[in-house]
Amino acid sequence: MKLSSLILILLLPAVAYSQSNDYNLDSYVNPDYKRKELDFILRTSSELSSIKSKGKMSGIETFNNDSKNNNISGDIGTHFYQIANSIKKQTSTNLILNFKGDYLSKSSDYTNDIGSSSNSKNKIFVFNLNYNQESYYYVKDKKFIEFSPSAYFNYNSDVDEYDNQTSTNYKSTSTNLLFKLGVGKGRIEQVEDAYLAMYVLYDLKKNGSLNQTLNPDEINMLAQQITSIKNKRRFDSRIKLIEEISTIDSFFTANGYTDAKTAPYFTSLYDNWMYAGLFKRAAGSRISFGVSPGYWWANNKLKNEPVSSSYSDFNNYNSEINASVYASYRYEKPVNLFLQHSILADVRGEWLKTRGEKNNIGPRFHGEYALGYYPNTRTHVRSSILLNYLSRYNDDVTYSYLQSGILIDLYYYLSPQLRINANGAFYLTYNNIKNKIQNQTNTNRNPHCFFNFGLQYSIF
Image (cartoon, rainbow, N blue to C red; front, side, top):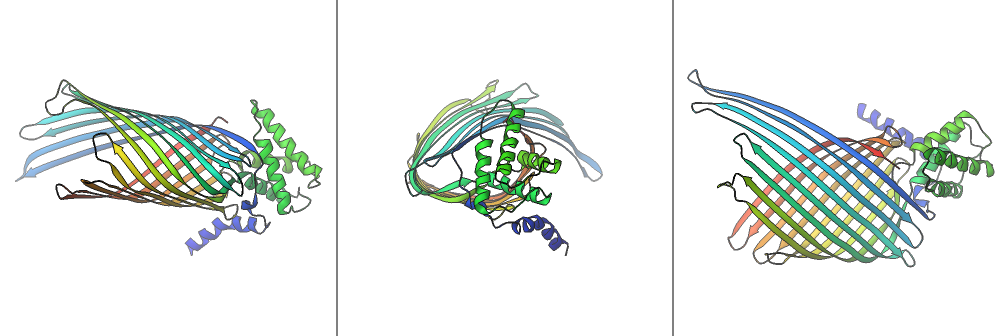
């Protein structure tokens, strides 16, 4: 009874809105526009643990162990996102810059007949730079040519210091370049402005400011007006907001949809304008086929101070040339204002040439289904199920990897710029390595779960 009541409470807003209009979000077609976003992300976490244990035999203490672990980690990053839409071209660009640090202190006081203690410190610094772009150039009948480049750079420093005046310093640098070149058919539209239009209309109708119920064509006209005015660039956010609200007010007045100039009318416009269009919504489907060549390079260094007889210093370089043929499919369906279905499937056949190794070939698959829930203008919950499969073959070794998992993401806006984000996941992974020459097989199964919490701030 409690579960059914909770489900009913969650779905009541969806029922109320769905009965208010027969408008479908996936009927919206965008005008030409460009949109830019810049976010700052800050996360931090800490972990303290202590273990105390004792052993006795015949009433005599044999050992006493007292160990402590202190861990502090955090990362700061920025994410620039740009989307451009026209009849002939759709592009989305992401540029992500991230710094991450981790500090771990371990101490152990172990007492027995011999007696021993140890202390160590681990310092990790990571820098990531990631760029990717999806570009679709349309010819006719929703047919397109795809050219999507991407690049990745990573630097990692890991230092371990011990109380016996020894240390190990590990550093790695890697970069990856690839692009996709293909053809396909289909189109996916961003429909968050239609989502905003529906919230504006519902609240105006609710407070008595709307003279009539708009039909689907009129709602599309309103949504296109919203898209056009929202993506105009102005440095002064106050002047920009005044211009946007004035434009929408003029649209309602000129078309005779309202003659209200009351506080409920303007506060509804302001509140929905600031919050209701912040979550990304999409509609449509797209399928593509093509080729994707790439190149990867890495350098790994390890240095011991003083020189260790147990662990050898090294300075290794590695590189890989790869090429693949791919088939990709994406489907987005906004059921209503509150529910969104998303499906993604990508199948590849890959060839890899790694320095010093034999050529590898094999398939790769990624599949994901996601359900988005938008209970109000400030909250977004997205749950997804994914499956990843990878195989590699050559004359000597066969490698297989399988991963399945459940992910949950939660966003809540404290202000139009500042939001709380939390996410968690549970994964099951399986990998199998078979060495044909040695006639040896190794199999690993690993469950894994995690939870993250952070704040995200958007500059624009």
